[in-house]
Length: 156
View: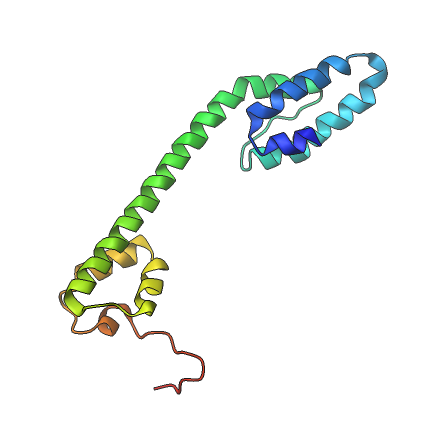
């Protein structure tokens, strides 16, 4: 249970318990329990901790422990890089959304609520297209498309 809870904190948090388990289960009479735990680590916990990672075949808890010791820093750095890239992409998207809201408000006045929803669901490419086209359009609808139809409203 502690392993499941600590797994939420990443592979480094699991290592101390794994080390204690390995030490306590060294006796040959615990071979089947060590093997069962190794299979559980490899097939369940490590796959959940590191989705998409190519994990080696593991035969014993000491191999799991060694693999974590060797790779945990590498994985942490990889995840940090991925997180930074995702943060940059999201920041870029938010910046373009704010810029578009600002120029649309300056051009058309207060924006209806559907505009905010439309912008929030747009891709970066769509935001770019709208930013590039906002001066050529006469209406919000001409740029962003028709607003969603409210329930109970007759269609045009």
